[in-house]
Image: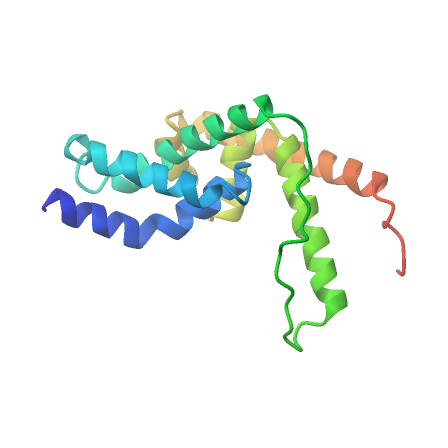
Length: 178
């Protein structure tokens, strides 16, 4: 197959998955589009070197490295918390404002918990639990043995439970209106 056709197929089939992976690996919302574009620019540049039908694995590995670089860059930036004031409000009658608030708090909690996890554990956790990939696929994408995937997944689940418990115990809203 022509490299251009392979690239187009890869973008068409994997862009949304790569975008979500980057976001869940800690790329800030305002930088995730650029990071996804960076991933596919690298894929395009390296397409002649990528074995046919291995495009997804290459894109995933690239996304993991791009996310890691983005996290390092962000750690070097001055501390500042951008607000959510620029987000558009949802005017749909379903779901209601309370449900939207609950969903937003749940997403924020998930992001805080994922941010607190070790990067290697977070990567396996996201790929397995949130993206629904199977362990052999993850082993290939991450480049580790299958046993390592199982070990990291077990440790990631333990870490996730502990971090959720810590964050919910610290939350001023826990127990409110319930």
